[in-house]
Amino acid sequence: MPEEDKGQEALRDAYSILARRARSEEELKIKLAGRGYTPSVIAETINSLRSDRYIDDEIYARQEARRLAVSKRQGDRLIEAGLKKKGLASSLIEAALREVRKEFAEKESLSQFLAREREKNPRWDRARKRRMINRLLAKGYPPELIYGAMFEIKEELLDGKEGE
Image (tube, rainbow, N blue to C red):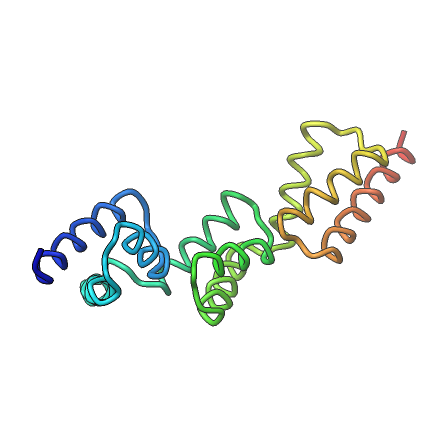
């Protein structure tokens, strides 16, 4: 097949891939390489998509960081790791996190998550606290933020007992 036809086929495949969900340039390169396209055809396809604004890593980083922070209630560490895995530059990730956290602070996210968990089960024994700390660490929240929030919960629980 001539190189020009391969380029058109790669472009069609890229549109199909992007129709399912947004992707970073690196993710799209990997997908196209997996379909057997040569590096030159992939580069040409990526350049075409970038110039037509079908892919934009800066916009993608902001949207994905916001989705993970708001919908998944992930901490900055996990969001950063996920975006790096998608091949995004550190500078784009840092800028996206700064922008997202202006709107939705990590501490606020953690507090809302814990409040929702306490509504489900207000009983907070030692084992539950330990499981919750491990869960929050796995969600990418920094230990100092977690322990600060847990201390606040402990104070609230103590205040509640004193009021009885």
